[in-house]
Image 1 (cartoon, rainbow, N blue to C red):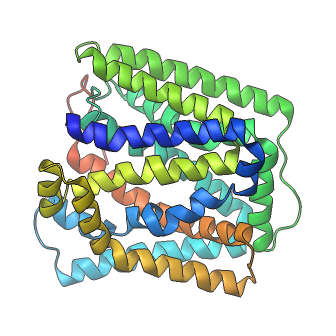
Image 2 (cartoon, rainbow, N blue to C red):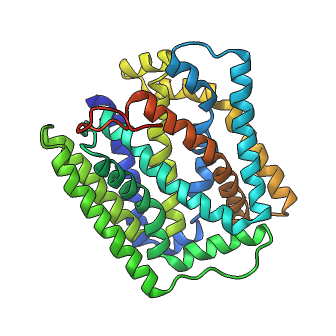
Image 3 (cartoon, rainbow, N blue to C red):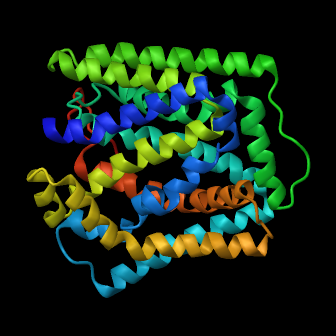
Length: 339
């Protein structure tokens, strides 16, 4: 996995590092184009990273799904997405709150497979270690930007909610921000200490990578403006890591990865994901027209709502993958956590 680790981690580290430096040296530029990473992610990696979810069960079960099973899977996936997209019109604040909660769990959990299989991290030793890992990796990209750069984050949320008819502004008091950051700091510190314990029997490199990633994510989200930071994370961290996992489930793409042809594997993946990458983008366009959203900020806000609605069934598929592949297995219990 050494070549895969270099291929799929170094660009990520460089991407986040460059973004942080850019935020420090050219803050006006970053503020002006804060929505650009999210918009770029949509056609490149963002929508694509969930576009083959309907193939996942068959590949992990190692059998072709029946037509009925395929129809039920696609209908359930689409129906849940449409239902939750409709929630933005009925109760936009509730829709936003639910999205943030599921994003914390999903983005935290989304790092676990990559850290174990590619980075060589030990599986969490206990359920507590597993939960702390997920919380730390999920709170850093979701809660830290909201607390550190509250004005920009809440302004973005206000703009999103206003598109769906909610007036008023969201607020976070300085005390709430401080308490929140202190709690997250304790969770990240606990994740680091538990990583030392979990990786005691692993090569030192595995521990250093794990701690280094925690440090990189912490510094990045503390230094980088909220909207720009989250968009960059989605573009260069979360989506590529899941796409690699999906390619590892497909025999032809896995063969290309084994030969060191990551670009060819990625091209093959995008060909497979094309249809269900384009369909959500069409949905974004239709909703943007319906809401008279014409500016880049408004279109990005609509995109965020669509991404949010797709996150629920996507997170469910990923959680099933985790269970099926034993990602939730703890070394202390020796068994996977229950579904």
